[in-house]
Image 1 (cartoon, rainbow, N blue to C red):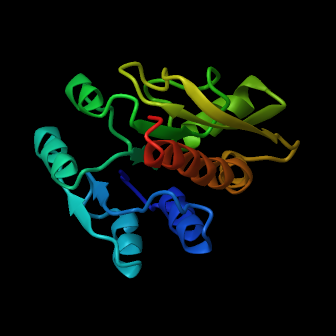
Image 2: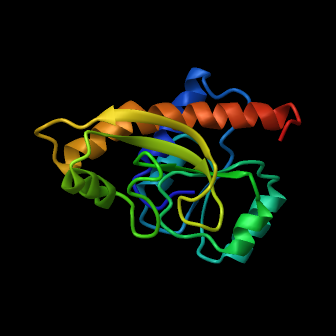
Length: 186
């Protein structure tokens, strides 16, 4: 599920192509934004996509397609309790900080990196976590630290967190969980 450019989606597509993700397959890209560049990434890679804002309809589509793992890869909408319950312990998210720092409602995109720089922390990073009804409050799956440099701007920090942490952690977590699902362990 994506809302924007789809850089994390591209990391997943690349990981699937390289064989890093081999226990599962990206079968659908869903967006709440018709203009999301992620939809173009899906099209260019032969992945079916849907655009919809109605969660009930999305639940139906996911269930029809037997979706086993939902990955929020830059999805900028808080999901309803109903949606979360429909895929309990099968929804993961990537967040651009070391949770519990700089997370929760309103903490997304550049805002996270601005807060880290304003606060003066020396290390930030990314976290992959299960989704529950508390924004960024689900059980942590993996984290990776990224050092903050003296001359960092929110933009340079965002890029480095994506490259060094998000694009590394998310594919690994997807493979790990997909492997557990394939083995019937989840």
